[in-house]
Image (cartoon, rainbow, N blue to C red):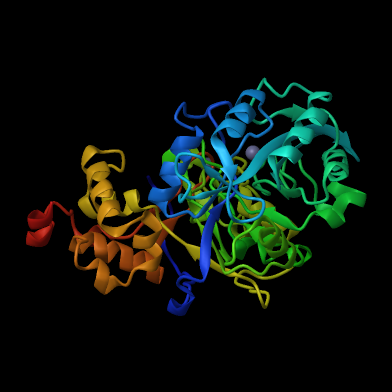
Length: 438
Ligand SMILES: [Zn+2]
Ligand SMILES: [Zn+2]
């Protein structure tokens, strides 16, 4: 409420139609119910089922370091036809699984004492995971949390695990979040090299996280050599695939590893980073939000009350950026922004996204359309028009075209993405088409 500026229109990139069928969608970073603050429903059968509904062909297991969860993985997974990947035993034709885990390192390095870095780890087989877990269990408590914490530098984690298998992959997780990331304002570093030192050459990819998108990262030329990936970091099934990666077929662990090394992937699926609570700078009690350059122009103080502004993630990116906004380095994958289908439905119907009507409509549309990504990303609008109510269809069209308004989050206030403008009126009337179908 009381913001100083109107919402702004955000443009979007979109994959060409002839790419259809050539890429698969992968979400590499999720958590199991053994992680803190994670839904009890996060277990392998639910991951398999939800990945199918979302339209993900590959999903991380999450949390392979946890002894109980690892036991479940050994029981419930069997090798997929694709090298280095697995399937849920009860759904052998279903989504593929890649063994994944997240580790937290809290340590001193350089001039700062309290470094806190999260790293996503991918492994090529259950046998390798067994060795990883054995090695890590000597250095910390793996059963305390699905995301275990260690007190040694993250570069040591890389060295230790690389000695177990050179095929293990390391991806600094949600690279810009203030408290637990490689570039975090409060606990991170100014460069990958400063953090990983002699192990830097083994870091090929960075996870941009929900609060940043590739466009923001492209402004830092030092990051050009890294493949930017996007994952959901889901703590509950419905969040699966809210960010994802489109890799080119064929699918296999070695091919994925190669794609992360070369950056040759089709696109990433992005959340609008403006939705994050600390995207822009601002002052909550005054309802003021500013871009980093506006903050500088105001000398870091709130233009209303004169108090200090809370600095956001965008500002941190700008501190390290050496390129102007809008710069696009050549040869980078497309950056495709999506709005979750439940949110599109909610806005189209003019009801809350957690409402029964939204859930019911979502289920029906998934049943008719195959999966969420097939509706949002793949099917022609003319095909969708056969079963998607008009206003929802219009929502999907606008999301695809990037005709979406964003109001950035700031100082703990969530940002807002809206598809329809207030002038377009409330949406109580869905027209005869929807009434006949539902
Ligand atoms: Zn994390
Ligand atoms: Zn103020």
